[in-house]
Image (cartoon, one colour):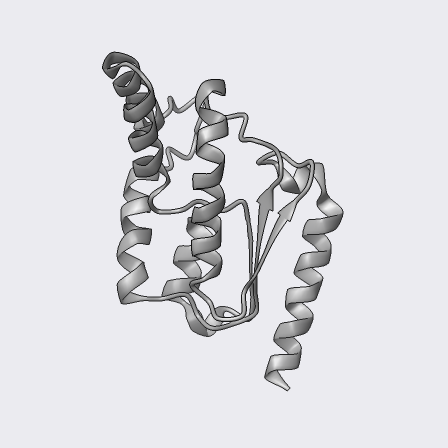
Length: 161
């Protein structure tokens, strides 16, 4: 979210964008819809509360407010679109481990669509599902992430020439 917000609000400082299983402004809303449709009300609401709660400082020393950041990102979509620069969106290939097992299979196409939606924000952006990777793509396949950064940097240089 931070990278997307920075790119949207400082387009003059952006030559290219690589998003690695990036956050989407509606991911909590979409997960909540799924939970409410699949779980008993008390379990769904407990899950939603956990998704949107601020973790303790020991777990999240920065106290990053995901809800506020998602609201800011949602607002930026209309006021400050992402710049038209070379962009690649890398997406995990294995179901998200952070989602409850009964919901993970159902959430996966939702996550993939949100990632395609982010890629569609910039004309010509590429979208790549990286096989056999978790949400930790940079840890699972640092070679793919590094090569994608190199490719986007090269495309940016070519665009500037």
